[in-house]
Image (cartoon, rainbow, N blue to C red; front, side):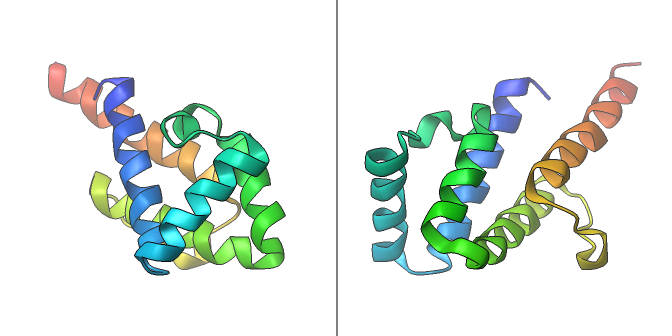
Length: 110
């Protein structure tokens, strides 16, 4: 899977995670990310640390709910199993998911 495909899937998971709060809320979150935190929607996959920090700035401890929702959607889209008990942190889970699909891609080429 090319890296930009993973980024598109991740962005789609972010959008679906925000949609779980309703469309108006999703639009408001993206607006706040961009205006208050300078986190542009299209740049989220390449600026995950800033994205996570912005979510925590907006939602405080409640950011973890959205992070888990996004991570769950990402795993579903990639065909990976998401274990709630394996949750450590958002950044770690995204990186682990990306690593888990790369070996499958490499094996498919052989």
